[in-house]
Amino acid sequence: MRVGWVLLSLLLAAGCGEARSHAVPSPSSKSHHAFRVGGQFDAEVFGSRLAARQRGWPGPRMPVAPPPRKIDCRQLKCVALTFDDGPGDQTGHVLDVLAAHHARATFFMLGEMVTDNTRDIVRRMVSEGHELGNHSWGHPSLVGLSEAALRRELERTQDVVQQATGVRMRVMRPPYGSTNHEVEAMAKQQGLAQIMWDLDTLDWRDRNAGLVAKRSGEAKPGDIVLMHDIHPTTVEALPRLLDELDRKKFTYVTVPELLGGVTPGKQYHNK
Image (cartoon, rainbow, N blue to C red; front, side, top):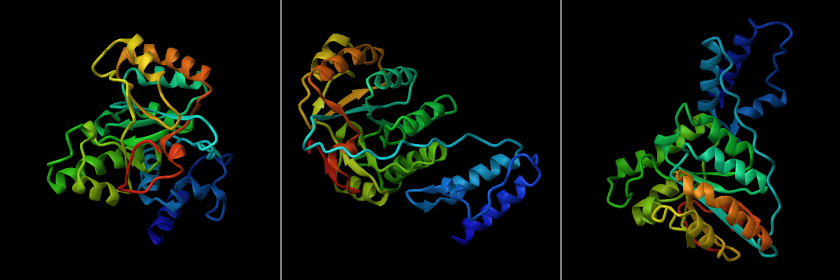
């Protein structure tokens, strides 16, 4: 905590050179909560903003997530739509379609895909209430990796997303669904629950929007649906599958909302 307040003092001092019309908040104000992640002061996020200010510009605004929703999936027909392997060129279109249907989803992202070109998309996910998930750095099978390599795959992705958004992810999906005791232990170390799926749309294999929409429309209450936000055919299918699920009166929730919370390391399918 001492490190955090030292950094806070430095930032406030740096702000003294700005125009007088920009009031600098005191440490006792509510502004210091902007540097908390999961209720804890995050010196890394704070430090990156301080460095940006010292370079002469304020840096990116960290997104603000909507307040948590009170959703009882024991009473509602809930479905958790999930998207793997992004963010990519199609992800913005996916977010547009989800927004049109007031739908929230979970995005399991590759760390190597979080770049200067996609950071704004990831921030948008947070601001629109979607859940961010860790899908490793480069999509290897995690089973069989050395402990050090396994840690790098998860930790680097945790770090790059946190630097972009201020969010420390709490769910992960092992590539190919491949996991074992070592993956479970490392996921637990990183504070990540393992999320599998119940309905695979096979959009990665069958680049056919009609098939993807048909398979997704067969979702049952409580299902976790697997899709990929990197395929144009999935984006094409999304309005149709959402129309079908709307007709069936589904509520679109994030994975933690569906499950009522998650435990690091634990493996989850349908509730």
